[in-house]
Image (cartoon, rainbow, N blue to C red; front, side, top):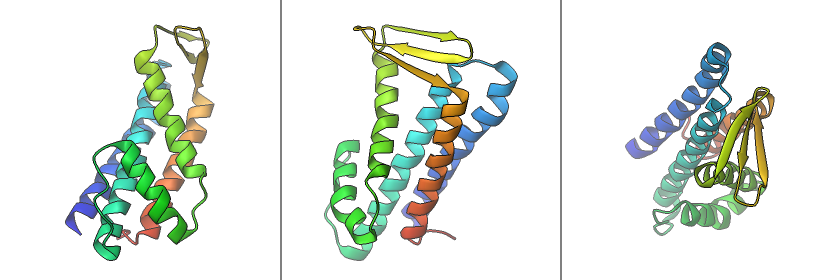
Length: 157
């Protein structure tokens, strides 16, 4: 149970960092590039939550090892945990979308801030725009999903 609680604490910490960046740091510095850091922290919180759930499931239902990659964790989560708890596939789509945003940012050839928005462009000039309101909505959704996962896994204190 220690690893579960440790993963839960790490996920909670990532959400706290994301919340602080959104509610405090962003309002002071008004730097749209911070929105990428918020997305990264939300993604890590969700990934840690899924890892914790899989650890919990592994101890209860004797599931096999789920591997070290994000893809392998998501696949086991999708096949084993979601059907057992009747979860909607929206959670996976949401997490993958966060991951894609991070990857696009890392691979982007051009990125810039414009009118309180952060714009990420790939080599083909496909654009992804992050703005404060959108990221705030994603934060609320991330927090809800993390809480739901820990409640389902009964990892709440």
